[in-house]
Amino acid sequence: MKTSHSRNILLADDSEFFREKLGDILLDAGHNLTAVEDGVEATEELEKNPTGFDLLILDLEMPRLDGFGVIDWIQAKGLDGKFPVLVVSGAYEPADAVNKIDGGAVTSVLSKESSPDDILFRVNKLLFPSISFERVADRAPCMIATDFGEEGSFETGIIINISSTGLFLKTTKNLEEGTILKFRFNLPGVDKKIEATGILKWATTVSGKDNRFGGLGVMFTQIRAEDAAYIQNYAIEEIKKFGTAE
Image (spheres, rainbow, N blue to C red):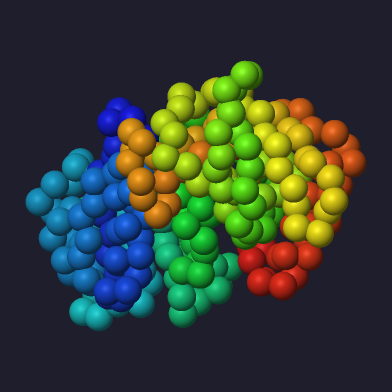
C-alpha cells in the first residue's frame, strides 16, 4: 500500500495471540499500530494524543477496564465521532455486542474469527470512507492459482477467497486502485477455464514487499453468466464446509 494510505491505529485487546495476529495484518498493510493490553492503557493513549489515531480497534472483554468502559470514557470526554471505533468480539456474537452498546460511539462490530481479508476489508471501509468498497456476496476461502494482469502482460498469483462478484488476490505486485485486471483460472472440480475482468478496489501490498497478507481486493466488472454461476456454486459449497459466511 502507498505511504499516503498509512493510518494510525490503536488496538486494545488482552489476548497476545490476537494482538499479534491483527498486528501482522495491519502492519503488512502499511499501517502504524499502537497495541495495548487493556482499556486503562487505551484511555491513557487517547488521553495523551486524542487526535493522533485514525481508528480504535477495541476488545469488549478486558481486565481493569473493559471495552464498554472505554466507550463510556470516550463519550464522557466528548470524543464521539473523532475516530471510528471497531469493536472485535470473541465472547459475544456481533449482534449481541451491538445490543449491549448504547450511545452510538461504536462504528462497526467484527468477530475475532474473521479472515484476514475480512478484517482488512472492514478496516479499509472505516479508514477510507471516500473510497467505494462493495461486497454483495459472501466470499469463500480458497487457494486457486490464477493468471492475472493488464492487457498483454500476465503473471501468476493466488486467489485466497472468491465469490461471484469478486476475489482477493495474494500477490506482491503493487498496483493503483482503479486498475483493470484480467483473470484466467480453473475452479477445483470444474473442467473449464474461467475468465473474468475486474477493477482493483483496494490494496494491502506494501511496495512489492513479500508478506503474508498483502494483496488486492478486486470486484468483477465483466464475467460470463455461466462462469459466475460456477463460482457462486463453488463458494456456497465452501462456505457450508467451513462456516465462513457472516
